[in-house]
Image (cartoon, rainbow, N blue to C red; front, side, top):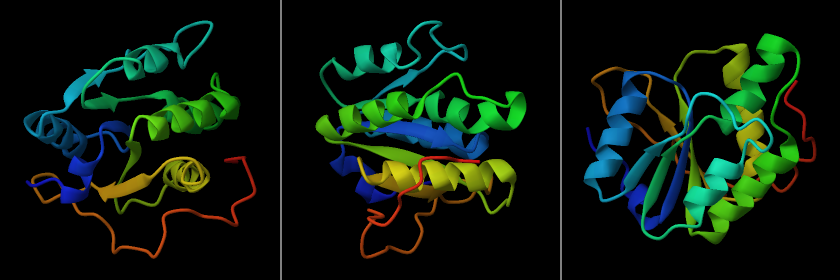
Length: 164
């Protein structure tokens, strides 16, 4: 499987979205491309969920972070009725990633679920702050596919900051 060449132009990648073999394979490929891969702990920091991200982003070199901050923003309301992460924390992370010549990787599948819809809404909002690269990783053993390119990844008319 070959990662889309667009990923090599970034110094920082935050990986969020679909969990599964395609994600695991993408992370392994990023390591082969020279990214230092870091996996975030499954439990969030109790006072500041974005703190571990800020600490990683302060370091040097090419970095790929297999994250869970946006997953909490999406799944928290779906599972518990609320998120332990705020929009401000996620938008601050997006700005920090952009300042570090980075992008957010939105991993998708063809599966239409409530979570997939919520992820799409979150990434539309984040695209106003940081480049967002959407990759379909749904087929195990198949290639990772970037969607057909759009004229712009920035959604200038997105005004809503809710995912529900």
